[in-house]
Length: 422
Image 1 (tube, rainbow, N blue to C red):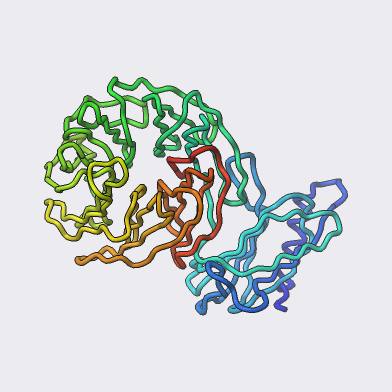
Image 2 (cartoon, rainbow, N blue to C red; image 1 turned 180 degrees about the vertical axis):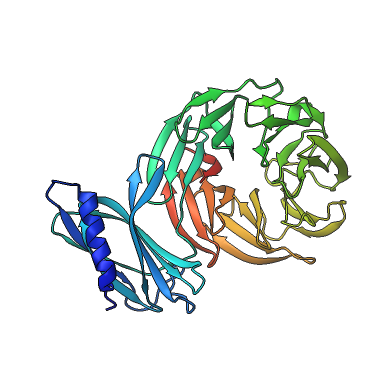
């Protein structure tokens, strides 16, 4: 067992005394931490990466419903299975985070668990690691049949329900606020920290999907989009793009895209200047659109039961030139996300996450069974995907390094839109 260096023990003892408070009797316990296990880990759990040179151990304290802050942290050498003893931990509910670091201090993998410390207790925590840094921040989930947002604190899984005046649909975040589109064509602005709710003044003509960094909202019945200023909740005038405009992509450089399924076209949006670029034919009625990190390829999904076209994933150049058209084992494409050279598509009827390699000749790479729940919208924190599972009332978590389901969170009724606040 790798014991903590005496220097660290002295610091830990001093910190424990300070946390306990002056003039009060100290009430503490001990944490026994072991990054190891018997047998072989099952993905997404992993052994410590070979490039691990040391570990960072942190004890985190929940601070209200928004944050988790460190009360103690230190580092100790170690390259493989690691164990240590942390004495003089104050009594209470904490979060333990162990991070495996490389020589440059980058986090390679983590173990993060809530822990309850009682007076005089010796609490043992043993487990394998998960790839990448530990999850942090607040995940907001629109419960489309529950008139509420579920707010999930990713550090320790704490769940809060925020009632709304209407059933929510889609979400996006900007400047510390969560913008919510509702089933009745209202838009709400939720302050992420204070949880206050404001009803925005929205132009008539029901809107659809919200997205992009600055805030772009499509108005299908009017065949166009409006830009939203997150600072004041004001909308620009309507810019007509095409029939039944819907599905806004993320912004790359200055450009986002909107698909116009009624015209089987897509239109470039110049976000900084709040203007329109070219409208190009795509040959199919798309529902959602995304682009890769360089803006060199645009992915459009659509079709399925009740739609005017068979299900598809279509890859195009920004000029509209066809790169690839996928129909293999697709029933109802629902969510679309591009990140780090891959495209991720959920199929709500097949219960799958389909992964495509983004290249000059895109190809299907992997299929991940997500289990019960009709997967829909997708959100990424850079290391994990969060997928809304409408029929099971859950959010599934997929580890990007292993492409394995890492867990599921129970949320509300028919979760749909997702947003992350960090």
